Image (cartoon, rainbow, N blue to C red):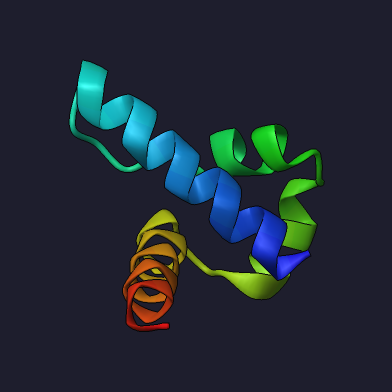
Length: 64
């Protein structure tokens, strides 16, 4: 589930950078991932935490 959350966060960040540079809300991430908000909160406490984790995953993927 965590990989789905990170992929959705990464996709939302990419699509919103084109329109307006802001971090997606927890509600947006949960809705796009198809999970309840409380499930998302069990992994990440804030939109910034999810954003940072998706950025860390992206830079880790670049190293592989």
